[in-house]
Length: 284
DNA sequence: TTGCAATGTGAAC
DNA sequence: TTCACCTTGCAAT
Image (cartoon, rainbow, N blue to C red):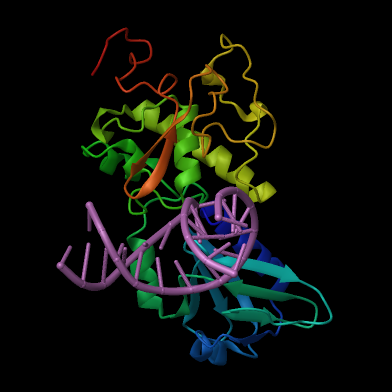
């Protein structure tokens, strides 16, 4: 389930399970043979994540393992005594206690420091990283005529957001996905950013993306609304097309945007810009 | 058993 | 804008 929270959680788990340990690496499937050979027998130093990209460093090696799960990548940690290899196993990393399996990833290769730097440089701020500055993303958004629903998915603008967080944050802030980036107000963007920080940290903590419960409802959504009938462990709009919106009952809509399915509530997320908070001025 | 959709990206046109 | 790629799980047959 690879959006940014998955990768950060993965980095944390790899570090806690293996950092400081001598590890063995192999690629039963063969597609990571060279890399696995270079790191086999080395001490894992640390794993780190930036957006949806994972980097794993080993002692005494300038190159890092770069992993991108893509749409289908899967990972598994286990402690079984019998370490069976099933299916197309790209990378197995293990020590005496634990093993980690990676399969289906778009990318899994050694990457030199320059290449890593260049990759990270072209990513936008990541809501899960302390040093990230939302205004860096804002500078791109405020100038763009592209719909905000598309901009959020652009990793050069914000790193780590995928189709679920896009749909959910836009719903939670009441923003029409089709609204042009340049029509968004900075306070609205900062609200979205704060909400992403909360949601994504929750995702890292729980390992789930689909348990955005009513308790995490942003206060700005207002107490005036009757509490929506949202069962716990659900999302607001993602993949709920045709089902009633938990807040207003309007059927959730779906449409393809930038080759991905977008989900939104046409009532709660108005196409026309809302009144700017406190100004009473209508902006379109 | 088959077929399709899926939380993603980048190259080719 | 379309396509290819990586793999799995679940729905339809």
